[in-house]
Image 1 (spheres, rainbow, N blue to C red):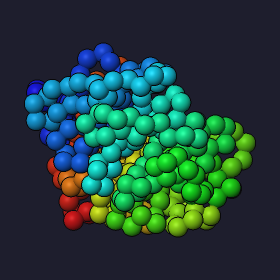
Image 2: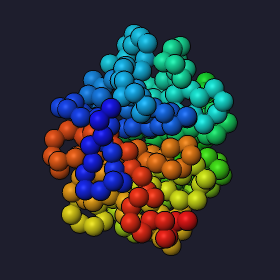
Image 3: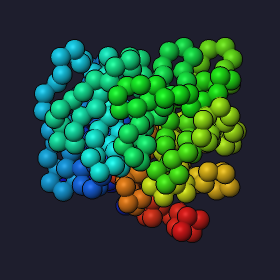
Image 4: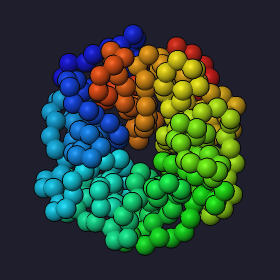
Length: 288
């Protein structure tokens, strides 16, 4: 597999071409990346080996009625099941791409984020007034994870402290606009949430040790970039140049790499990149 570098040795692009690639996540062993290829309304889950570069559709067979496969998350639990959002709800599938199961009563839900026991997920309930819910692997809603005073987006469950949840959100006033989101932290039932900081931010994802979070933000004013922060926002550090519009970062399970979406030439369809935080100048000085 040929590696393409943009600007420094901290980024390696793993997909190329004219396809739309988005929403990546590492496999538990860190040897593969699962991502969505194609437009949102007709996307397919693809799996690429980071060892050989081989790429293939992840699902062995597309389930009847599924026209799009997006926003996957790969469980940390022993069975390593994958959850993804489709046009008709949240699906579970074994880690070899077999035995897909549609969870009942999950229509309109997106962005599944696994709890570490593999028995439940946090999800975004879409629509004009989005909220965050906890659901079981039987599709049963186990309760709200966001207060009624917030519109909330893509959630991230802290794998080290599963009572902690991060999501982008904004006051539930007027029309929801994801470009106005900020990061919010909630505990336990989710009936209260505290703003992490005031700057714009979306798509947070906890590191495996639960001590920091990666996210995307336009706070620099000249494009989207990937940042990492401590939960109290005492340190916020930029990892990518805004010219490549870095988005949707997710950590590897060993915490050493981040997979994300970017635009290597600044334009064109999104591509999947590997980000090595320790190779970004200054990172190790503040996050060691």
